[in-house]
Length: 406
Image (cartoon, rainbow, N blue to C red; front, side, top):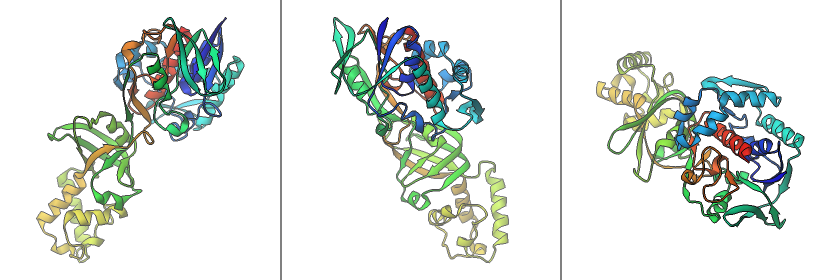
């Protein structure tokens, strides 16, 4: 019987251990006191396990190295994942956008069934820090621990996570271990994260959540490079929410110093229809001050912002507003513009982009092409996808592949 050492006790590490344990003696080396710390905060604590959609849909939503993942996803796709967790006793449901969640809406239930299966398969947990993967004659033969000395192993799976949410233990240490083994590490960048804005007025709208909002992003050449519709949140100097974190995946600040983000606050109304609506409201509030005429059209926090950006005097009565001023106001409703100057860092990012170079990993087994008996799974690999459950599916699929390969 082989001895398998798995570095990392997150989603990928646990899945890899469960699969490897059928024919091997398996140990998970985890630096945290307890497994699955990052899993518990996934999907705001609800754990979006995957996306109940066919393989091609998953491939189309992978931003970094989709072809590399084809073998892993084909072997363990979203439908297989659904059955797998159902068989473990976890009740699941498919929600809006085909997102798979535990029916209880608790990530802790996902962790519970994984830990139960680990226990049933007699997987041992070692609470320690992996400081080095020991290599002899280009073969991985063990792991040097910070406190526990050297553990010998016949196969090693590196599933130590990325650099996002470092407080959960994903502090980038897995990349150092891979680099020590001679692997190239593709530049690390935060993925699926919030966007920092230049305009000062955004601070006045802190805490505002906008729903049913249109979004367009333009590069410095004025070309539209992204559009979406849905929710976003205005925070203290930045914008956040599902649309924003998806948009962050296509912005490259190495190529552009800034981007223009345009919000359509009334996407269901074209300019002419919105103008008619505005005229009706102005007629209703004909003798009121401009500052008191926008209550029916805007959230309270945006009213002072619109007054400031429109350049219409707040104490000007509605019946004094000119047609030109009204057109400028319409443009604010349909094209409220923000300048995006940077992304939030790893402390806020959901995933890490970059990682162990996929050219140095065999995609059909996930074994290193440089070091025999060394395998990779999860976020430590240079793969990343859009939001919607696709990233956690990658973690489980690569772990399933690596666990079975050993």
